[in-house]
Length: 135
Picture (tube, rainbow, N blue to C red):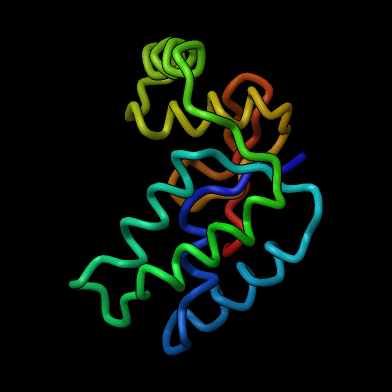
């Protein structure tokens, strides 16, 4: 299983321009069947995709429809054990809490790989290896 971070979802909705190559890569990734994400990732996607200051914000209905589509993937729920695991990972790796929560969710989902451009590519956090699919 491979865990996808919020930036993959956000690039997938880019209409083009300078991020066209990243958009194509993200869309190709989201065609896979072996993906996992978390409620946190879906929440972050919604907030960022519908943000009024975004160049082309999505309407609520469009963002909701995409989230419904992505529920076909394994989705890790928010829970107290996930929070506790994230706090341990934050302390161990000195990451932000939000990055640690992504790592905890990826671990909970049984993933070995995390696709993200936000963490250090090639670095391993326990059993999770970070890969930047855009580099």
